[in-house]
Length: 204
Image 1 (tube, one colour):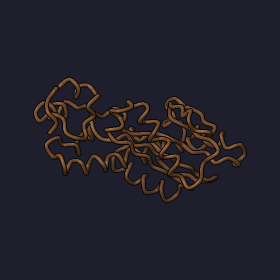
Image 2 (tube, one colour):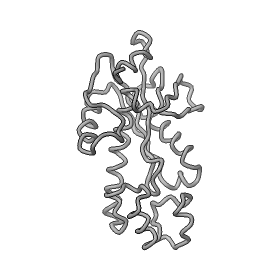
Image 3 (cartoon, helix red, strand yellow):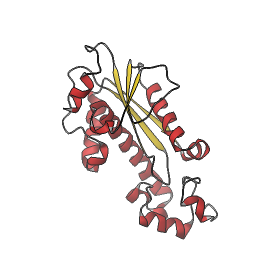
């Protein structure tokens, strides 16, 4: 089934606005978790929409601009490492998703969410396992979230060049862990995440 056809099945004859919700950045050792929310109107179609992890960075960038131009509505939520350390990554992800929904111009009638439930919202919702591979709006939300987060990490690369954030975006690559062992964690590292909490070096 086409990703846009999947969303049509939830619109109840196109009377209900459906928002797809997804996040980027649950796995990294540094930086924020970012969520996106996207609402498409009836008849909207964007070629190449897919799970952001399957797309080349250049394709994600192109689709990012096409999505924000063609979407009926979109929102972004960003939750930083301090809150992640305070409440844990799952709760921080849900906060980011709620912020993305609140960033919409109008609250939707239904939420399609990638594998997460948001019990604090009084909006009907469906948690869909691997939703970014099935739903166009969830996939689009994943693209917005991924591109925004990557841009944030590129900015941190200028502030903390020794960690090479532009190359790995904070994910636990071998090179990133080598840099952490060499310099210790910095202000944007998630102090509650292994291996950060196991290093016991002063923050620089």
